[in-house]
Length: 129
Image 1 (tube, rainbow, N blue to C red):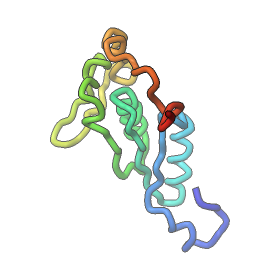
Image 2 (cartoon, rainbow, N blue to C red):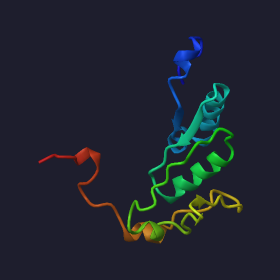
Image 3 (tube, one colour):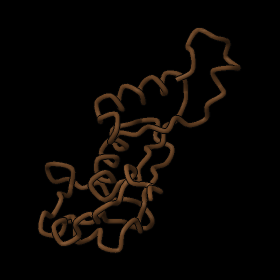
Image 4 (cartoon, rainbow, N blue to C red):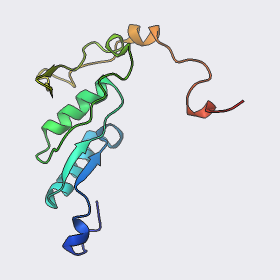
C-alpha cells in the first residue's frame, strides 16, 4: 500500500491492489484487502498457479468486499484436470465458489505421478549449457 500519511492525490495513485493470496496466505491477504478497502482501493487476486490456487483465491475473493476482478488461468496445462480431483466450475462466465468443506478441490496424487517434472528443468537450469 502507498504511504498512508501523504496527501490524497498520492494515495489515489493505485486503482487496484493485486493480492497474491497463495503467496501471502489467505489471512494476510484479508488484512491487505482491508487496508486497501480503508482507502477505497479495490483488489484483484493474482492467480496463475492452477486449480487449487484458483479455489483458494475464490474463497478469498468471496470474503472480500472490495473485489474488482479475479485472474484465472483456464488453459494453464493440458493435463490440469488430471492432477486435481475437481476442476473449477464456471457458469455464465463466473467462477462458482463451492460450498463444501475445504477449498473445493485437492491434488490427485496419481495424476501428479503421471506427469512428473522433467529432469533439468526449472529456473535453476535456465539457459545453462
